[in-house]
Amino acid sequence: MNNLISEIFSIKTDTKFNETALKIFRFQYQNNETYKQYVDKLKINFSEIKHYSQIPFLPIDFFKTHKILSSDKEIKTIFRSSGTSGIARSKHYVTDLSVYEKSFTGTFKQFYGNPENYIFSALLPSYSEQGSSSLIYMVEKLMQISDKPDNGFYLYNHEKLYRKLKELEEKKQKNILFGVSFALLDFFEKYKIKLKNTIIIETGGMKGRKKEMVREEMHRIIQNATGLKHIHSEYGMTELLSQAYAKKQNRYLAPPWMKILIRDTNDPFDLLPQGKSGGINIIDLANIYSCSFIETKDLGKIHKNNTFEVLGRFDNSDIRGCNLMVI
Image 1 (tube, one colour):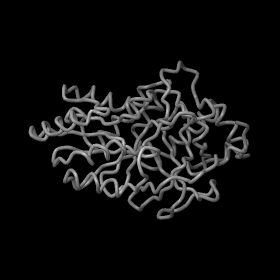
Image 2 (tube, helix red, strand yellow):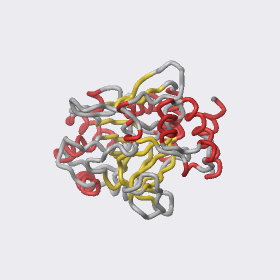
Image 3 (cartoon, rainbow, N blue to C red):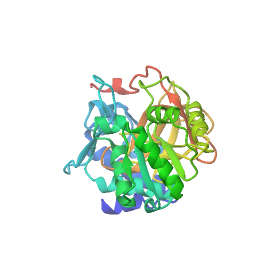
Image 4 (spheres, rainbow, N blue to C red):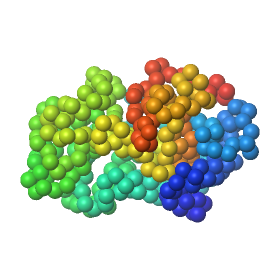
């Protein structure tokens, strides 16, 4: 398996992506009982799949109801999604944390360079409070690589964060502020500070906390408070071990081992061409020990330059395909 993991993180072409995706599909079909049952219920001939676009995508809600695992190794940790009381949280069973670390450090370097060049600030209260967050794990590891005393989590201590941002700006120190949407809005509605050396990466997370608003509106509020030309975004989720980033205009780009496909909202087994809006399917090859082929509840579209937009979520969406199996 070590050779296959090395193969994942050395992908440079679509041909190589296809070759590796097919290997992982076969591995997961043979080693993930839930995924195998799902594929079999679809009456898909396992041996006839020749391209990643033909691979069945597992509806994401299976991570709430089943143990999605393609390994008999010891479980090192369980990442859990955020959620309100009484709502089932997704669980991602992880047997090899080094794969996750390779994924997020490799992606960060692709978009921002060496983590050692940055201070990291985090305004992620909901994730910190609920625990078992893959996002918190990622930010903590980036802070460890950075190894700077000014790194820190701020929860609801906005005054302390404000002072730190001012101090870092005066030093002209490069800083990355990871923030959940509602917390960033709370902070920048209260504090106005001109930022030149800070990159703000919002991670989503508005639902149930503040008035729903489109991402562009939220970014404008933060831009007006900071003078920054662009607010960056991170697209990730508990069920993935990879992330995509948008540096401007909400156009996300994924690392080479992650691919976005768009499905018809009325027929989840029909994939749409570039420029058409529909449901987001994700291939995340870093999910080698869980499931790499996931049908999400997000809506989006792909552009010609391989960037993609996230347009929203299904309203009252059911679990596509889950009627095929007893939950």
